[in-house]
Image 1 (cartoon, rainbow, N blue to C red):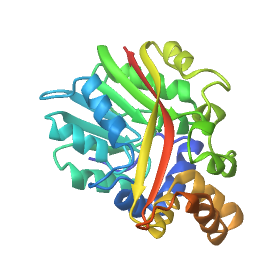
Image 2 (cartoon, rainbow, N blue to C red):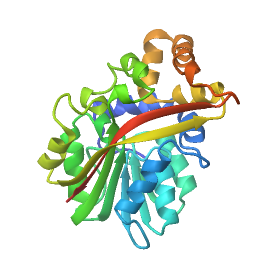
Image 3 (cartoon, one colour):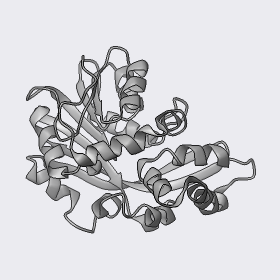
Image 4 (tube, one colour):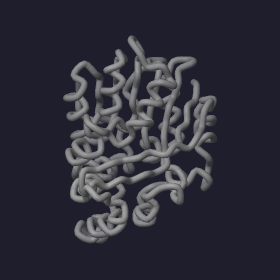
Length: 266
């Protein structure tokens, strides 16, 4: 199995560089085995799309492979793709029987009609052309297969809102606020999917202390973009000042944000 992406857009190459810088921090803190970043949404998706024994599942933008591991624990045959080499290596370590490939979301290296379920947790909007990425997802999905994806919710409904202002240049508007630009439902419809479910979901994250939160957040691709612009010390201080009000008496930090969950059928 080759670990060289066959086709890579300029945007994907930029994402690979940003997310590679602290990939292991992301894997250990945000996609931790004990309390991964999106566990409630992971569990809801696994239930809603009925992942079980024999399900052929592809996670697009799989990161360090935590969701794929959870799907494999339910009996699914899991595959994943990400443009960040370190993430692919980590994902393979989590799920040795999985098929994890290095590549661009706009050029999926699988045949037509391969998967029963395709997922993408805050990943599709990083594609240089989101429409192309979703059309590729539709191509590899079997007829009647389900796609589940998330994007950021409304900034005013979450504690992460100040950070969105800092990273505004690094993510498309519709990734943060679904009411701006083409709605995600339109992207899915244009790609051949029929949307069956679309709702906002709150998501709570807890970190044992501020240092751990800062370590995890400094691994986020768009925040690496900010680091390049203004320096790591300034970004770290910004994160600390933003989330200090959320420190609990025991020193842990609780952050609640909102995400948009969409499920569509091919």
